[in-house]
Image (cartoon, rainbow, N blue to C red; front, side, top):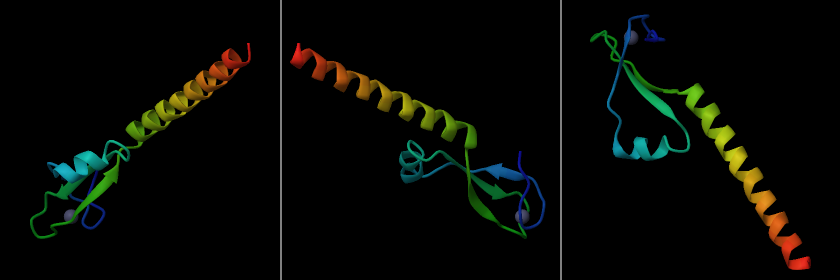
Length: 78
Ligand SMILES: [Zn+2]
């Protein structure tokens, strides 16, 4: 678990709102809240591993579409 940037306490994972869950489909974030009641820090931390995987997947899709597009062009000309 990461530490609070304000006080250094352990952070707790907070359940996300439906909006955040929808957002995390394109921009994966994890929501954390500080376990120190006096601090009360809460924030979102980007899920780097998931973001990387998502970007890689998007790239593969883009390449796939480009190949498909070229192929259909080739088919139309032959
Ligand atoms: Zn804190």
